[in-house]
Length: 183
Image (cartoon, rainbow, N blue to C red; front, side, top):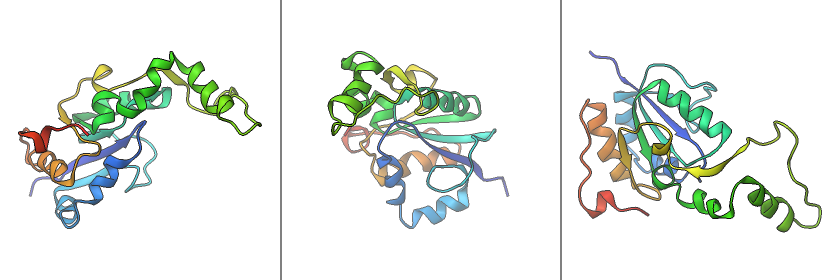
């Protein structure tokens, strides 16, 4: 028997909707557990550091903070097949709506001062929050991506259509509007 594929899921700057869609795989999750060893995931493990020798990683969310960028670089360095998982990872989507504001300072002012209930202050203490990048970016602008999985969030059927062939060592073939549509 060959070894099970090592699968990771990663959550950057997004709403976790893509990870919630994984649970919509229902009974196929049992088959997935036989085909893959989940070695890293914000929803299924207590592993704090990204492991080495990961076969497949589903990366959800845009890259919006210094922590996101550091984790993404670890993922890319230790993963054979990186899947850009959902519209935020593919286009920055909702997370990228902050980009026209012109950098981190206007975003922080708006969130912590203008919309505060009267007791607002900027979170400038070092280490209090991860540093915001100048722009929220899609994954492929920072690291190479092998597979794109659109959707906000992608449906369980679409996730399975990508994972099944990858777990067999094949390239997924998403076709038609039901498989390729954003949103």
